[in-house]
Image (tube, rainbow over all chains, first blue to last red; front, side):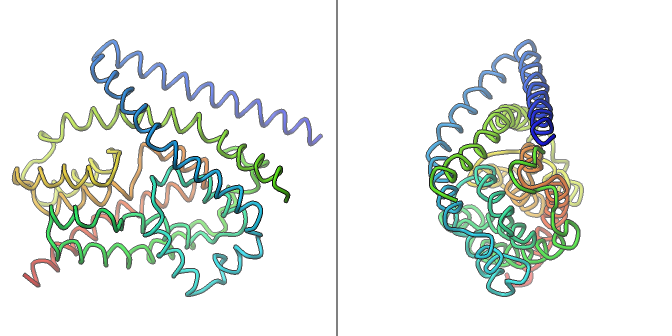
Length: 185
Length: 138
């Protein structure tokens, strides 16, 4: 029974992916027909972005292997679980600010942690604080000034906590994310 | 879990994500390049309307946060209000319409939708507060 269910899930996932890629290709065919410079530019930029994020993916793969090995559900629950309290908030805000890379590149790692018991509130706060990027602060100061940067940074940190609290209530345990074998999106 | 199992599990997670990521990136770049052509025509001069338009434009746009500062800086020089520019910068990094399907698949549909909805609302609130506080202290 389980094997049959797994085969059904895999087929469904494969079909979904096939439909998704058909839509992407159809959109690009239309784009090529109407404005090929737009389509070519978009293709080139996608390639460049993928090249840029490749090293991040290698790093994320290593982190995921290490977290599978050492980050036990008990450990995640203790530091990032619902009952982690102030310590959980502190880590979520700190890592959200310090961790580099585009958010979508971090999704597999975050999903892994979610499966191990990462609370929704910390996940949301972590993602919101990715808005505060220390290496980019000089650029923001250059374009918008010191006061603007300081005020906006403080507001983002404060609102990341609101974001976490609201999402914790709305999404609760986020049961959509179960074990990687069960979940297929 | 031993090392072999850990490597397989991590590999499977990435393997599941990569085809969707590449497809989403292709779509995001197309939307982004298309939206950029209309940046100039988008803003009307109306304070509140422009803030909302800025937030929408930022939500549809995609790329490094630094790009949003450069584009935002250009908007300011062209006379777009600081409120609209702030909403644009905020939603650029916190709201990701283009990556929503990927986020939903990886972190849960309900989580992805609510997160983006609230981040959009918060972006507008933060923009208003930033400009208000800035006016008070300057």
